Amino acid sequence: MPATKRERQNFATILKCILAYIRYPVESTSAVELAFNGKPCNNWWGSCPHFLERRQMLNEHIESPLQSSSVISTSRLTKAFGKLVAVNDLHLEVMRGDVFGFLGPNGSGKTTTIRMLLGLIRPTAGRVVIFGMDNTYQLPAILQRVGAIVETPVFYPFLSGMDNLHAVAAASGMRSGKANRRRIDEVLELAELRAQAKLAYRKYSLGMKQRLGIAAALLADPELVLLDEPTNGLDPAGMFEIRQLIHRLAALGKTIFLSSHLLNEVQQVCNRVAILQKGNLIKQGNVHELMRGSEQVLVRLNTPEETQRAFDVLREAKDRGADWISAFRIEMNRQGEPALRIDAPKAHSAEINALLASHDLFAAELHPYEGSLEEVFLQLTAPVAGGRRGMAGLADSSPIAATIPGASLPSNAPPTYDPSKDRKAGLQ
Image (cartoon, rainbow, N blue to C red):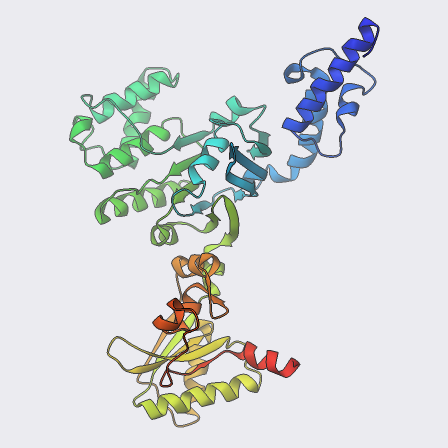
Protein backbone atom coordinates (compact mmCIF):
# COMPACT_ATOMS: atom_id res chain seq x y z
CA MET A 1 0.00 0.00 0.00
CA PRO A 2 1.43 3.47 -0.91
CA ALA A 3 2.86 5.24 2.10
CA THR A 4 2.61 8.97 1.41
CA LYS A 5 -0.56 10.98 0.95
CA ARG A 6 0.38 11.88 -2.63
CA GLU A 7 1.04 8.25 -3.52
CA ARG A 8 -2.31 7.21 -2.06
CA GLN A 9 -4.04 9.92 -4.07
CA ASN A 10 -2.33 8.83 -7.27
CA PHE A 11 -3.13 5.18 -6.55
CA ALA A 12 -6.80 6.06 -6.02
CA THR A 13 -6.79 8.00 -9.29
CA ILE A 14 -5.49 4.97 -11.18
CA LEU A 15 -8.25 2.78 -9.74
CA LYS A 16 -10.91 5.34 -10.60
CA CYS A 17 -9.73 5.76 -14.17
CA ILE A 18 -9.48 1.98 -14.60
CA LEU A 19 -13.13 1.75 -13.53
CA ALA A 20 -13.96 4.43 -16.05
CA TYR A 21 -12.03 2.64 -18.77
CA ILE A 22 -13.89 -0.61 -18.08
CA ARG A 23 -17.26 1.14 -18.11
CA TYR A 24 -16.53 3.39 -21.12
CA PRO A 25 -13.74 1.87 -23.25
CA VAL A 26 -11.56 4.43 -25.01
CA GLU A 27 -9.82 3.28 -28.18
CA SER A 28 -6.00 3.22 -28.19
CA THR A 29 -5.76 4.70 -24.69
CA SER A 30 -4.81 2.99 -21.45
CA ALA A 31 -6.26 3.87 -18.07
CA VAL A 32 -2.79 4.73 -16.81
CA GLU A 33 -2.31 7.20 -19.68
CA LEU A 34 -5.58 8.82 -18.71
CA ALA A 35 -4.54 9.12 -15.08
CA PHE A 36 -0.93 10.15 -15.63
CA ASN A 37 -0.78 11.98 -18.94
CA GLY A 38 1.68 14.40 -17.36
CA LYS A 39 -1.04 15.74 -15.03
CA PRO A 40 -2.17 13.40 -12.20
CA CYS A 41 -5.70 14.22 -11.05
CA ASN A 42 -7.64 13.48 -7.88
CA ASN A 43 -11.23 14.03 -9.09
CA TRP A 44 -13.87 11.32 -9.31
CA TRP A 45 -13.76 9.66 -12.76
CA GLY A 46 -17.16 11.03 -13.82
CA SER A 47 -15.88 14.60 -13.59
CA CYS A 48 -12.16 14.07 -14.16
CA PRO A 49 -11.23 16.85 -16.62
CA HIS A 50 -8.25 14.95 -18.03
CA PHE A 51 -10.32 11.84 -18.66
CA LEU A 52 -13.09 13.85 -20.32
CA GLU A 53 -10.63 15.94 -22.32
CA ARG A 54 -8.84 12.85 -23.68
CA ARG A 55 -12.11 11.06 -24.37
CA GLN A 56 -13.60 14.07 -26.16
CA MET A 57 -10.46 14.34 -28.31
CA LEU A 58 -10.76 10.69 -29.33
CA ASN A 59 -14.52 11.00 -29.94
CA GLU A 60 -13.99 13.97 -32.25
CA HIS A 61 -11.33 12.04 -34.13
CA ILE A 62 -13.58 9.00 -34.53
CA GLU A 63 -16.92 10.71 -35.14
CA SER A 64 -16.05 13.58 -37.45
CA PRO A 65 -16.45 11.50 -40.66
CA LEU A 66 -19.92 10.37 -39.50
CA GLN A 67 -21.45 13.70 -38.54
CA SER A 68 -22.67 14.65 -42.01
CA SER A 69 -24.35 11.38 -43.02
CA SER A 70 -24.81 9.14 -39.96
CA VAL A 71 -27.56 9.96 -37.45
CA ILE A 72 -27.31 6.85 -35.24
CA SER A 73 -24.19 4.73 -34.85
CA THR A 74 -23.76 2.02 -32.23
CA SER A 75 -20.61 0.06 -31.53
CA ARG A 76 -20.62 -3.27 -29.64
CA LEU A 77 -23.79 -2.19 -27.81
CA THR A 78 -24.67 -4.78 -25.17
CA LYS A 79 -27.22 -4.97 -22.36
CA ALA A 80 -27.46 -7.79 -19.84
CA PHE A 81 -29.98 -8.23 -17.04
CA GLY A 82 -28.20 -10.64 -14.75
CA LYS A 83 -27.52 -13.75 -16.83
CA LEU A 84 -29.96 -12.71 -19.56
CA VAL A 85 -28.26 -10.91 -22.45
CA ALA A 86 -31.06 -8.86 -23.99
CA VAL A 87 -28.86 -7.13 -26.61
CA ASN A 88 -25.53 -8.55 -27.69
CA ASP A 89 -22.71 -6.76 -29.54
CA LEU A 90 -25.03 -4.60 -31.65
CA HIS A 91 -23.62 -2.51 -34.51
CA LEU A 92 -26.23 -0.22 -36.15
CA GLU A 93 -25.82 2.51 -38.74
CA VAL A 94 -28.79 4.80 -39.50
CA MET A 95 -28.17 7.40 -42.18
CA ARG A 96 -29.71 10.86 -42.46
CA GLY A 97 -33.13 10.72 -44.14
CA ASP A 98 -33.56 6.96 -43.62
CA VAL A 99 -36.84 5.33 -42.71
CA PHE A 100 -35.06 2.59 -40.81
CA GLY A 101 -36.92 -0.58 -39.82
CA PHE A 102 -35.73 -2.38 -36.70
CA LEU A 103 -37.19 -5.88 -37.05
CA GLY A 104 -37.48 -8.82 -34.74
CA PRO A 105 -40.00 -10.98 -32.89
CA ASN A 106 -41.32 -9.96 -29.50
CA GLY A 107 -38.57 -10.29 -26.90
CA SER A 108 -35.72 -9.89 -29.39
CA GLY A 109 -34.36 -6.73 -27.71
CA LYS A 110 -35.89 -3.95 -29.84
CA THR A 111 -37.37 -1.89 -27.00
CA THR A 112 -34.25 -2.40 -24.87
CA THR A 113 -32.16 -1.00 -27.72
CA ILE A 114 -34.42 2.05 -28.07
CA ARG A 115 -34.20 2.67 -24.33
CA MET A 116 -30.40 2.63 -24.57
CA LEU A 117 -30.48 5.01 -27.54
CA LEU A 118 -32.58 7.45 -25.51
CA GLY A 119 -30.47 7.10 -22.35
CA LEU A 120 -33.36 5.59 -20.37
CA ILE A 121 -31.15 2.67 -19.39
CA ARG A 122 -27.37 2.32 -19.41
CA PRO A 123 -25.72 -0.25 -21.64
CA THR A 124 -23.62 -2.95 -20.05
CA ALA A 125 -20.97 -2.33 -22.70
CA GLY A 126 -20.49 -0.46 -25.96
CA ARG A 127 -21.39 3.04 -27.03
CA VAL A 128 -24.10 5.03 -28.80
CA VAL A 129 -23.35 8.01 -31.04
CA ILE A 130 -26.29 10.17 -32.20
CA PHE A 131 -25.75 13.26 -34.37
CA GLY A 132 -22.02 12.74 -33.84
CA MET A 133 -22.39 12.99 -30.03
CA ASP A 134 -21.83 10.24 -27.47
CA ASN A 135 -25.04 9.85 -25.49
CA THR A 136 -23.02 9.09 -22.35
CA TYR A 137 -21.80 12.68 -22.17
CA GLN A 138 -24.08 14.77 -24.37
CA LEU A 139 -27.51 13.25 -23.83
CA PRO A 140 -29.36 16.57 -23.16
CA ALA A 141 -28.08 18.04 -26.44
CA ILE A 142 -29.10 14.84 -28.28
CA LEU A 143 -32.62 14.72 -26.82
CA GLN A 144 -33.32 18.26 -27.97
CA ARG A 145 -33.21 16.92 -31.54
CA VAL A 146 -35.12 13.67 -30.92
CA GLY A 147 -38.81 12.78 -30.63
CA ALA A 148 -39.80 9.31 -29.45
CA ILE A 149 -42.61 6.96 -28.51
CA VAL A 150 -41.54 3.99 -26.40
CA GLU A 151 -44.25 1.35 -26.13
CA THR A 152 -47.78 2.75 -25.53
CA PRO A 153 -48.25 6.53 -25.15
CA VAL A 154 -50.36 7.65 -22.17
CA PHE A 155 -52.44 10.83 -21.93
CA TYR A 156 -55.07 12.34 -19.62
CA PRO A 157 -58.31 10.55 -20.57
CA PHE A 158 -60.72 13.43 -19.84
CA LEU A 159 -58.70 16.12 -21.64
CA SER A 160 -59.09 16.72 -25.36
CA GLY A 161 -56.33 15.83 -27.79
CA MET A 162 -55.38 19.49 -28.11
CA ASP A 163 -55.31 20.06 -24.33
CA ASN A 164 -53.16 16.95 -23.91
CA LEU A 165 -50.66 18.37 -26.39
CA HIS A 166 -50.65 21.67 -24.48
CA ALA A 167 -49.87 19.69 -21.31
CA VAL A 168 -47.02 17.82 -23.03
CA ALA A 169 -45.63 21.09 -24.43
CA ALA A 170 -45.69 22.70 -20.98
CA ALA A 171 -44.02 19.67 -19.37
CA SER A 172 -41.35 19.75 -22.11
CA GLY A 173 -40.45 23.35 -21.33
CA MET A 174 -41.95 24.88 -24.48
CA ARG A 175 -42.99 28.49 -24.01
CA SER A 176 -46.71 29.22 -24.15
CA GLY A 177 -47.95 31.68 -26.75
CA LYS A 178 -48.85 31.96 -30.41
CA ALA A 179 -45.82 29.95 -31.59
CA ASN A 180 -46.77 27.13 -29.23
CA ARG A 181 -50.41 27.11 -30.39
CA ARG A 182 -49.32 27.27 -34.03
CA ARG A 183 -47.01 24.26 -33.60
CA ILE A 184 -49.78 22.26 -31.92
CA ASP A 185 -52.08 23.06 -34.85
CA GLU A 186 -49.34 21.95 -37.25
CA VAL A 187 -48.78 18.55 -35.61
CA LEU A 188 -52.54 17.95 -35.33
CA GLU A 189 -52.81 18.65 -39.05
CA LEU A 190 -49.85 16.37 -39.79
CA ALA A 191 -51.40 13.56 -37.74
CA GLU A 192 -54.81 14.21 -39.38
CA LEU A 193 -56.44 14.86 -36.00
CA ARG A 194 -57.55 18.44 -36.60
CA ALA A 195 -61.22 17.44 -36.74
CA GLN A 196 -60.92 15.49 -33.46
CA ALA A 197 -58.70 18.04 -31.68
CA LYS A 198 -61.39 18.96 -29.11
CA LEU A 199 -62.65 15.42 -28.58
CA ALA A 200 -61.85 13.79 -25.21
CA TYR A 201 -58.90 11.41 -25.43
CA ARG A 202 -60.92 8.56 -23.90
CA LYS A 203 -63.18 8.68 -26.98
CA TYR A 204 -60.31 8.26 -29.43
CA SER A 205 -59.88 5.03 -31.34
CA LEU A 206 -56.64 3.10 -30.84
CA GLY A 207 -55.28 4.41 -34.15
CA MET A 208 -56.12 8.00 -33.17
CA LYS A 209 -54.36 7.50 -29.82
CA GLN A 210 -51.23 6.26 -31.58
CA ARG A 211 -51.28 9.22 -33.96
CA LEU A 212 -51.71 11.63 -31.05
CA GLY A 213 -48.64 10.04 -29.46
CA ILE A 214 -46.66 10.65 -32.64
CA ALA A 215 -47.99 14.23 -32.75
CA ALA A 216 -46.69 14.74 -29.19
CA ALA A 217 -43.28 13.40 -30.23
CA LEU A 218 -43.21 15.93 -33.07
CA LEU A 219 -43.95 19.03 -30.96
CA ALA A 220 -40.31 20.13 -30.79
CA ASP A 221 -39.87 19.54 -34.56
CA PRO A 222 -37.20 16.82 -34.05
CA GLU A 223 -34.75 15.69 -36.71
CA LEU A 224 -34.91 12.07 -35.52
CA VAL A 225 -38.15 10.26 -34.64
CA LEU A 226 -38.04 6.91 -32.81
CA LEU A 227 -41.23 4.85 -32.92
CA ASP A 228 -41.54 1.64 -30.91
CA GLU A 229 -44.19 -0.69 -32.39
CA PRO A 230 -46.48 2.17 -33.60
CA THR A 231 -48.94 -0.22 -35.31
CA ASN A 232 -49.18 -2.70 -32.45
CA GLY A 233 -52.79 -3.77 -31.89
CA LEU A 234 -54.21 -1.65 -34.72
CA ASP A 235 -56.76 -2.82 -37.28
CA PRO A 236 -55.89 -2.57 -41.01
CA ALA A 237 -57.38 0.94 -41.24
CA GLY A 238 -55.30 2.10 -38.27
CA MET A 239 -52.15 0.57 -39.76
CA PHE A 240 -52.82 2.38 -43.02
CA GLU A 241 -53.18 5.70 -41.18
CA ILE A 242 -49.84 5.20 -39.40
CA ARG A 243 -48.14 4.26 -42.69
CA GLN A 244 -49.45 7.41 -44.32
CA LEU A 245 -48.21 9.50 -41.39
CA ILE A 246 -44.73 7.94 -41.64
CA HIS A 247 -44.66 8.70 -45.38
CA ARG A 248 -45.53 12.34 -44.63
CA LEU A 249 -42.76 12.58 -42.03
CA ALA A 250 -40.24 11.09 -44.48
CA ALA A 251 -41.31 13.66 -47.09
CA LEU A 252 -40.46 16.38 -44.56
CA GLY A 253 -36.89 15.06 -44.33
CA LYS A 254 -37.17 13.43 -40.91
CA THR A 255 -35.00 10.44 -40.05
CA ILE A 256 -37.28 7.72 -38.68
CA PHE A 257 -36.23 4.72 -36.59
CA LEU A 258 -39.16 2.29 -36.55
CA SER A 259 -39.21 -0.92 -34.53
CA SER A 260 -41.77 -3.59 -35.37
CA HIS A 261 -42.40 -7.30 -35.60
CA LEU A 262 -44.87 -6.80 -38.51
CA LEU A 263 -42.61 -7.43 -41.49
CA ASN A 264 -45.19 -6.58 -44.15
CA GLU A 265 -45.79 -3.16 -42.61
CA VAL A 266 -42.09 -2.36 -42.45
CA GLN A 267 -41.59 -3.46 -46.06
CA GLN A 268 -44.11 -0.85 -47.21
CA VAL A 269 -42.54 2.17 -45.47
CA CYS A 270 -38.82 1.53 -44.82
CA ASN A 271 -35.85 1.90 -47.15
CA ARG A 272 -33.32 0.21 -44.82
CA VAL A 273 -33.75 -2.47 -42.15
CA ALA A 274 -31.88 -4.35 -39.46
CA ILE A 275 -33.07 -7.78 -38.36
CA LEU A 276 -32.63 -8.78 -34.73
CA GLN A 277 -33.05 -12.23 -33.21
CA LYS A 278 -32.55 -13.00 -29.52
CA GLY A 279 -30.55 -9.81 -29.09
CA ASN A 280 -28.20 -10.50 -32.02
CA LEU A 281 -28.06 -8.56 -35.27
CA ILE A 282 -28.31 -11.06 -38.12
CA LYS A 283 -28.72 -8.75 -41.13
CA GLN A 284 -28.69 -5.05 -41.99
CA GLY A 285 -29.10 -3.33 -45.33
CA ASN A 286 -31.29 -1.86 -48.05
CA VAL A 287 -34.77 -3.41 -48.23
CA HIS A 288 -34.75 -3.97 -52.00
CA GLU A 289 -31.24 -5.41 -51.94
CA LEU A 290 -32.23 -7.86 -49.23
CA MET A 291 -35.34 -8.92 -51.13
CA ARG A 292 -33.45 -9.24 -54.41
CA GLY A 293 -31.96 -12.49 -53.13
CA SER A 294 -35.47 -13.98 -52.83
CA GLU A 295 -36.71 -12.93 -56.29
CA GLN A 296 -38.35 -15.70 -58.29
CA VAL A 297 -40.13 -16.28 -61.58
CA LEU A 298 -43.22 -18.53 -61.62
CA VAL A 299 -44.01 -20.25 -64.92
CA ARG A 300 -47.03 -22.42 -65.71
CA LEU A 301 -47.20 -24.33 -68.98
CA ASN A 302 -50.17 -26.05 -70.57
CA THR A 303 -49.50 -29.70 -69.68
CA PRO A 304 -47.45 -31.66 -67.12
CA GLU A 305 -45.34 -33.02 -70.00
CA GLU A 306 -44.42 -29.51 -71.14
CA THR A 307 -43.57 -28.59 -67.55
CA GLN A 308 -41.14 -31.53 -67.33
CA ARG A 309 -39.57 -30.57 -70.67
CA ALA A 310 -39.17 -26.97 -69.45
CA PHE A 311 -37.47 -28.30 -66.32
CA ASP A 312 -34.93 -30.16 -68.51
CA VAL A 313 -34.38 -27.07 -70.69
CA LEU A 314 -33.58 -24.96 -67.63
CA ARG A 315 -31.16 -27.60 -66.37
CA GLU A 316 -29.33 -27.59 -69.71
CA ALA A 317 -29.21 -23.77 -69.72
CA LYS A 318 -27.76 -23.76 -66.23
CA ASP A 319 -25.13 -26.31 -67.22
CA ARG A 320 -24.20 -24.13 -70.22
CA GLY A 321 -23.46 -21.15 -67.93
CA ALA A 322 -26.73 -19.39 -67.06
CA ASP A 323 -25.43 -18.50 -63.61
CA TRP A 324 -28.32 -16.11 -62.91
CA ILE A 325 -30.46 -19.19 -62.30
CA SER A 326 -29.88 -20.24 -58.70
CA ALA A 327 -32.29 -23.19 -58.51
CA PHE A 328 -35.66 -24.31 -59.84
CA ARG A 329 -38.33 -26.84 -59.01
CA ILE A 330 -41.77 -28.06 -60.00
CA GLU A 331 -44.58 -27.28 -57.55
CA MET A 332 -48.34 -27.67 -57.51
CA ASN A 333 -50.24 -24.37 -57.56
CA ARG A 334 -53.55 -23.73 -55.78
CA GLN A 335 -55.49 -25.29 -58.65
CA GLY A 336 -53.43 -28.48 -58.42
CA GLU A 337 -51.54 -27.75 -61.65
CA PRO A 338 -47.75 -28.25 -61.96
CA ALA A 339 -45.73 -25.03 -62.28
CA LEU A 340 -42.06 -24.09 -62.36
CA ARG A 341 -40.69 -21.92 -59.56
CA ILE A 342 -37.34 -20.49 -60.65
CA ASP A 343 -34.97 -18.77 -58.22
CA ALA A 344 -33.73 -16.01 -60.52
CA PRO A 345 -33.85 -12.19 -60.73
CA LYS A 346 -37.19 -11.02 -62.11
CA ALA A 347 -35.26 -8.89 -64.66
CA HIS A 348 -34.54 -12.19 -66.48
CA SER A 349 -38.26 -13.01 -66.94
CA ALA A 350 -38.20 -12.18 -70.67
CA GLU A 351 -35.02 -14.24 -71.11
CA ILE A 352 -36.69 -17.25 -69.47
CA ASN A 353 -39.73 -16.83 -71.72
CA ALA A 354 -37.53 -16.60 -74.84
CA LEU A 355 -35.50 -19.65 -73.75
CA LEU A 356 -38.61 -21.79 -73.40
CA ALA A 357 -40.12 -20.47 -76.65
CA SER A 358 -36.93 -21.43 -78.54
CA HIS A 359 -37.78 -25.03 -77.56
CA ASP A 360 -41.43 -24.68 -78.64
CA LEU A 361 -42.56 -24.33 -75.04
CA PHE A 362 -44.98 -21.44 -74.57
CA ALA A 363 -45.93 -20.26 -71.10
CA ALA A 364 -49.61 -20.09 -70.24
CA GLU A 365 -48.69 -17.84 -67.26
CA LEU A 366 -45.47 -16.11 -66.19
CA HIS A 367 -45.26 -14.14 -62.96
CA PRO A 368 -42.16 -12.30 -61.71
CA TYR A 369 -42.14 -12.52 -57.91
CA GLU A 370 -40.16 -10.04 -55.82
CA GLY A 371 -40.27 -11.89 -52.53
CA SER A 372 -40.87 -10.31 -49.16
CA LEU A 373 -39.13 -9.34 -45.95
CA GLU A 374 -40.96 -12.22 -44.30
CA GLU A 375 -39.21 -14.72 -46.57
CA VAL A 376 -35.86 -12.98 -46.03
CA PHE A 377 -36.43 -13.15 -42.27
CA LEU A 378 -37.36 -16.83 -42.40
CA GLN A 379 -34.38 -17.66 -44.59
CA LEU A 380 -32.11 -16.02 -42.03
CA THR A 381 -33.73 -17.34 -38.87
CA ALA A 382 -35.65 -20.56 -39.56
CA PRO A 383 -34.07 -23.96 -38.80
CA VAL A 384 -32.28 -25.64 -41.68
CA ALA A 385 -34.46 -28.08 -43.63
CA GLY A 386 -32.70 -30.30 -46.12
CA GLY A 387 -29.60 -28.11 -46.11
CA ARG A 388 -31.48 -24.88 -46.95
CA ARG A 389 -33.04 -22.27 -44.71
CA GLY A 390 -36.54 -20.97 -44.23
CA MET A 391 -39.05 -20.90 -47.06
CA ALA A 392 -36.59 -22.31 -49.58
CA GLY A 393 -35.89 -25.25 -47.30
CA LEU A 394 -39.57 -25.88 -46.68
CA ALA A 395 -40.31 -25.64 -50.40
CA ASP A 396 -37.73 -28.34 -51.15
CA SER A 397 -39.18 -30.78 -48.61
CA SER A 398 -42.47 -32.56 -48.29
CA PRO A 399 -44.46 -31.85 -45.11
CA ILE A 400 -43.72 -35.33 -43.82
CA ALA A 401 -39.98 -35.20 -44.55
CA ALA A 402 -39.74 -31.79 -42.94
CA THR A 403 -41.28 -32.88 -39.67
CA ILE A 404 -40.41 -36.55 -39.11
CA PRO A 405 -36.71 -37.46 -38.71
CA GLY A 406 -35.55 -40.03 -41.21
CA ALA A 407 -38.56 -39.63 -43.50
CA SER A 408 -37.90 -39.61 -47.24
CA LEU A 409 -39.62 -37.90 -50.14
CA PRO A 410 -42.38 -39.88 -51.85
CA SER A 411 -41.51 -41.42 -55.19
CA ASN A 412 -43.94 -39.13 -57.05
CA ALA A 413 -42.59 -35.89 -55.50
CA PRO A 414 -41.98 -33.04 -58.01
CA PRO A 415 -38.36 -32.80 -59.09
CA THR A 416 -36.07 -30.13 -57.72
CA TYR A 417 -32.78 -28.97 -59.23
CA ASP A 418 -30.15 -27.28 -57.09
CA PRO A 419 -26.94 -26.58 -59.08
CA SER A 420 -24.83 -26.60 -55.93
CA LYS A 421 -25.34 -30.35 -55.68
CA ASP A 422 -23.79 -30.84 -59.13
CA ARG A 423 -20.83 -28.67 -58.15
CA LYS A 424 -20.32 -30.70 -54.97
CA ALA A 425 -20.49 -33.96 -56.94
CA GLY A 426 -17.87 -32.65 -59.37
CA LEU A 427 -15.45 -32.07 -56.52
CA GLN A 428 -15.65 -35.60 -55.20
